[in-house]
Length: 200
Ligand SMILES: Cc1cc2nc3c(=O)[nH]c(=O)nc-3n(C[C@H](O)[C@H](O)[C@H](O)COP(=O)(O)O)c2cc1C
Image (cartoon, rainbow, N blue to C red; front, side, top):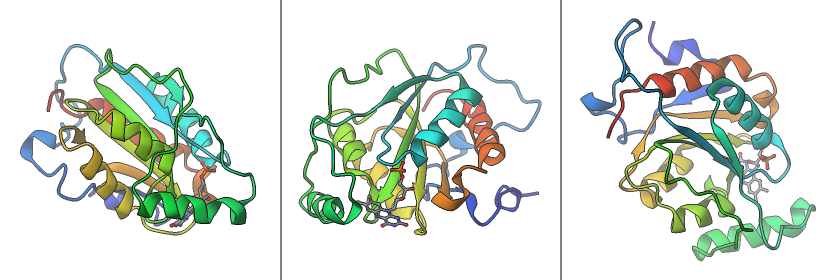
């Protein structure tokens, strides 16, 4: 059974096309031997209305990763219509949205689960801001993204742009309406990330 057939249409394991198709990126078959040490995993996420946060809790429970939530110095309005144009403009200008300190120190981690809502065709502005300063060079990055309805390709493209020296693992995407029921799929995805070959 291939991977795509194991996932529903609404909660799919999307290949980060072109970023993970080398032989070194292939998952080991079940029963294969992995490096003796489990990867040191961190989870970094931003969530404005709580959906990504819910997925982050599932990822944390499945992985044991240390969790870091990105927060803003100047949070967006709770009102979607008041803030969405601002976020769109920030994206088109490649602008930053300053993050509250303390920022995650990821120096001791080699696998980074990275969670973001999908905004205007890509990663949310706070996650983009984080990656501008932390391009995660030399890390394995396991992205998970939630959208209202869009497919997540723009998020994987953003990651390749912002993290050119990271190894981007196949990402997990779900639509918002299916997020609360995604535990089974996201747990399987986390397992595949933890079992991916060590190294770059
Ligand atoms: C500024 C902004 C832009 C968005 N752009 C998109 C989009 O392009 N496609 C889409 O399907 N959903 C889009 N959404 C919807 C969010 O991806 C969706 O509501 C998500 O579940 C929010 O996650 P959160 O609850 O963790 O903040 C957008 C939401 C916001 C606030």
